[in-house]
Structure formats: structure tokens, C-alpha cells
Image (cartoon, rainbow, N blue to C red; front, side):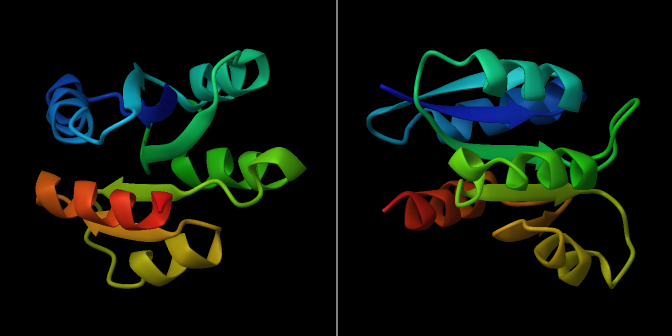
Length: 123
């Protein structure tokens, strides 16, 4: 079974994403509360990481830094990454894509739309 990492410090948002993404066949979800925890999990992962869904604003590091570090490793250079943010900056979607995200969703978002996009990227 492949793993989808959800990096989200807001418990409600994390649970909503987990419920939406657990329905993707052949995948399980793991929720992590910080970019540091995600990087540690990626380094020691014994299961296959299929994708990453991350919030932008989190304590200590932001989603941009997480993506930058992820993309610097060859094995994760093409990993599907979705970014989510409640930030209202109209340039943010373009910035997220420029930093290496494959898709961007503004809060509030449709969990079903996030799932559909992730399913497309996983095919």
C-alpha cells in the first residue's frame, strides 16, 4: 500500500483531508503536523510515499521550504505535491507552482476536488 502524506497543523483541516483521501484505492494516509516531521518521515520511510499534501503556513517552516527540500532529492523530484493555503495573496497559486507544487487549493477548498486532482496526478 502506498502512502499519501498530509502535512497540516490544523486538526480539522487534517481530518477533512484524511477522510477525503483515504478513499483513493491502494493508498493510506498519514497526517503529520509539521514540515520537520514530514522530512523526517520521508528520510526514514519504509513504505512507498505516493504523494504529499501540505499547508503553506505552519510553525518553524512553511510549505515552500518543505517543497524546496523535497525537490532537492532525486527520489522525490517528481513526487506529486499539492499545496493548500488560507492566504488571500492572489499571486500565491503561481508562487506555489513556481516552488514545485503540482497544484494549489485555496481555503476553503473542496475536499473532493483535492481528491480528484490527486487521483489524476497518481495515474
